[in-house]
Length: 189
Length: 274
Image 1 (tube, chains in turn yellow, purple):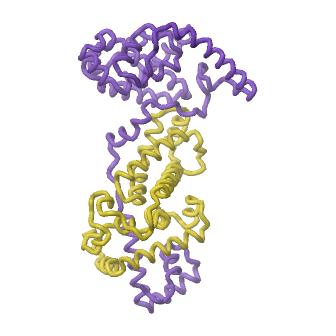
Image 2 (image 1 turned 90 degrees about the vertical axis):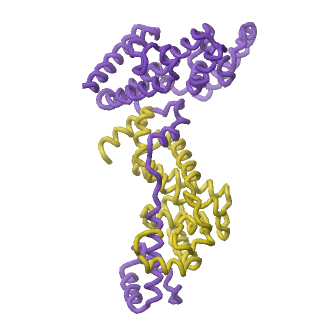
Image 3 (image 1 turned 45 degrees about the horizontal axis):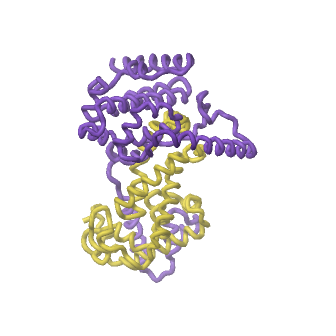
């Protein structure tokens, strides 16, 4: 941990909101990115990050330094996302309406087979549980064991959800994914 | 998708979680199975696509909006030593003692009701801003315990523009507006000092002073121009010395603390301007 981060943590735990803000600022964008991947909508992602900030601020005195500050905050965000998903009861087989998908109003899931790939539309077709493990693996690069710890799940469940999530997406979008993976120009269009 | 029934292995292989013998065997299979090779390429593409998800840049406005609900926070529970006046320094009462204290407090409250009923009624902190501002500007506000004062000051602190509008509309006098601004500035100053002494000496206090100087400037700039004039300092805001003059110190020890803080703040301001 960088020396100045240790100082910031000490200051924040001593009551300095400025120090806490400095810490949070460092991790704001990756947290927002994760929230966006989990929710698919910028407005929802921002709400999730706000909730994470408030919770982290209130509980920062409990941070013991056993993980990094980012890992600690990410855990709060993931829990908040899980709670929100449970509250919304998003069904696996129901894609989100077109106007609720992506940071900008993009094509509906049915229209994903356009030339422009909308990853949020694809992820939105997964259940929150499948989406969560896939995002933690691909976006955050966590190992199965780390994902299991983050989500308080058996490792076997993580593995199973991952491969089922991938299989589901491949079955749903196989022709398109195949076409795009062959045309690896590196762009979305 | 490939009929080879290797999907779980493929998923583990993709993530680098397959044991070495399993991975080797799967690579051998891949060499001879175009379908599995194609499926693996698709999964890699899917992962790359997810990794391309990006978030908007972190901007000051975005952060300010995020932190706005915390502008008047309950203080973070401090892990280090508390200032001498902090209630967190008081020994944690036993449950019995807490119960007794609670009963006594209730009795005191009951007695106080009779006294308070004879006084002019006190507005709620979330009442109309003009009503609250008049109350805060009055002598009655000064007699409140600090804990009660905080609620009113927090409410007004969020509504400075409305306070200014109330003055322009004649619902409060210019003198009352001036009084409100002075009290708010004093409260902010008190919090600065509390925060400063909550930190250990050295680099942390220095960084805290830097933050205070930045925040002070920002706070004054956020005031409507008429309120800035009330403080009499324009964009630079009141000097800490001027705030101190308006801030009576209860004891000699308080005065010494304030004097030390001001000296350090002044030194820091001067070192930043060079």
